[in-house]
Length: 403
Image 1 (cartoon, rainbow, N blue to C red):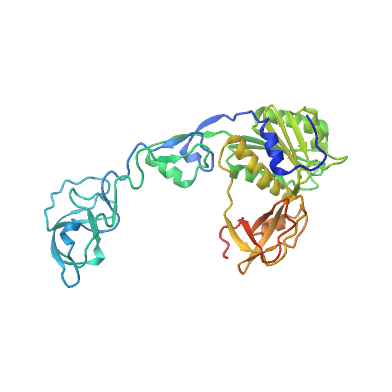
Image 2: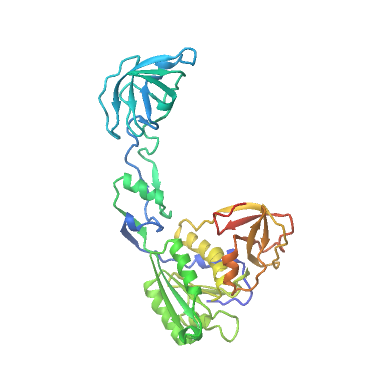
């Protein structure tokens, strides 16, 4: 074990910790109705074809495209409607001769030998006669067999976060239960002021919500006074039941680095204290029993930066799962975005009139700066800020933001 006093580049620190993460989280089978947002532990492959037969995508008249290949406004084709199909997902045994058609509703299978549908609003209907005034392409307004889902299609990949459309696909396949990563985390917020009720430990809720968004199935929360022995006991206890332990507060590189001292007392496999990250320089990355232990500032902006830049990358690489992916857009800056050379910087920004400007609220404790932000910009370590007019990627926190 070696504690580093100098600040280490984020990517290098992550790569070093990954070498010690040997722990494998368990797999748990859950109902698909409880699986939303969790991470799939298996590949799910379709064993069905959907639709099974040609299916109408509009209300209209099913016909042979060859019967109306010469139809036009000046040369309309008259077809005789011999039947109707109104029951979805049922194959109707209707005999349709040349020059005939059937009325069909959306979602219904076409009778045999018919290959296209003309929308009802494009037809002139006189009794049982349907006047068609244009040609129809083969398979026009028709879903082909296997077009929506085919045998062998990958419906859900192992390591993917389960989305609403996955639930629909699982339902179609008749799958009631799905294997997911049973990820469990513990968050320990340090600070005697929280135990004594002087202040509220709200950063713990930010971290809790982020971990649930990532796909953790269970997240335990603890608040403890600034006491090395108690923090050590809690970390040790949390490691026995969690795949990840996060400690908030007590990371300053000085006399009050309670959390760092507590982690050291557990004799971790490795420990890095100090990252080239702004905010978040005092972050500690460690491994104990093959599991990650991460100590970070208890201030909300610093914690958010560490979650987005460090924890997201570390977890996705360790577990080989999909990271949280914020929507991003490329826009020019309308004001200088400052950063220090040698530090990877997460800058909270607003989007105004199609350009980007930093939020003029400084400090890692400013929760308001996150609430006001439309997104954030990451300034690399080898760049000393972004000048006016430079194009940057903005990772959106408000997906409804209009640019």
